[in-house]
Amino acid sequence: MLKRFVDVLVALVAIVLLSPLFLLVLLITAITSKGAIFYRQERIGYKGKPFIMYKFVSMYPDAEKNGPCLWIEGDKRQTKWGEFMRKRRFDELPQLWNILRGDMGFVGPTRPERKYYIDKLVKIAPDYKTLLNAKPGLVSIGIVEYGYASSVEQMKDRMQYDMQYLKDTSPIKDLKILYRAFWKVILGRGK
Image (cartoon, rainbow, N blue to C red; front, side, top):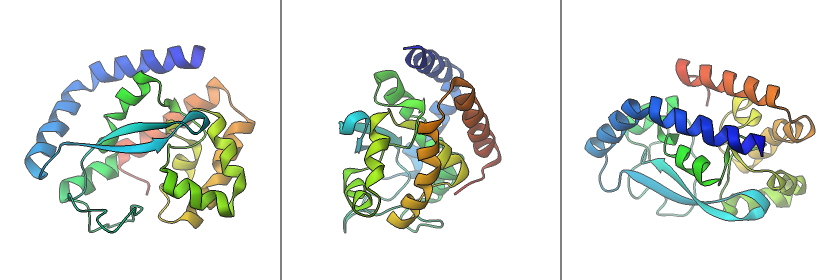
């Protein structure tokens, strides 16, 4: 309950403090993107329950016309503005809403993933299902240490960090993860 209280409190403070940035990103996204400003995608959360995750649009409208695809460095499906946003994680600002709703927390054992990729990952790494026993996060130690995965094999590699989180969860560890994630965002580092 304490973790949930902190998530809600920090999300509310972040929304207020980041509202000028949120509005700027919203405006630039509206100008540079064709169609919608927000991207809605079903992800799998706590106990395998699906939810809709929100992001700012960073890719062209037909980015997944041939089926689900993972983002890769220099992805041609993303707009120029989308590339800038993703490097600094601005596209994820709308997920503060997901945190308020309780779909996810600030820090979790893993980021919420799509069922399509979970099904593929579980075939080669059945332990992944263990990660669904905790609420996913806006950030995770796997994202901080490893970064985004461009393949199911990389998801499996990143899992070693995510599994460590479940074994050693604490408020201090969450603060350390948030601190390191903050500097990656500020410096525009990480994949």
